[in-house]
Amino acid sequence: MGDATQGGGSADGGRGFEVAGLAYITLYIEDYDEAVAFYTAAFGEPDCKQPVFMGWRMGETWMTVFPSKDGNAPGKNPRNMEFGIRVQTPEQVDVLHARLVELGAKNAWTPEDTEMYDRMRFSCVDDPFGVRIDVYCPLTD
Image (tube, rainbow, N blue to C red; front, side):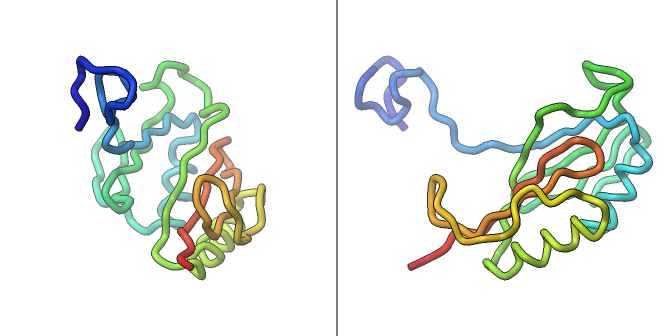
């Protein structure tokens, strides 16, 4: 890790910190019961069931769903929110994309091989609650 007091060429870009990863996606959804049913159908039973939220283990992190009344905009669904799910093989991008569409998500980007930050198999859908879900897998040469 770069020295927090240095600028320029340090690993932290002179910001004083270095991000090691991004984790813990949390969604506050007005249609809570419908959202829990949708995500359960898509990803299986929640790995953590609490009286006030449900959580699904997603690789090294968690996706948590709360009722919107517990968030900063009670009575609303998420707006302009997107997150990505990395799967193990390029073929699984197509499988998960099709599953999400079958469950009621709208196709936003049909699966294809592309290059964004890296070469990848990529797709995305808009779920019934206003969340864009990217599905991707890096492609190797």
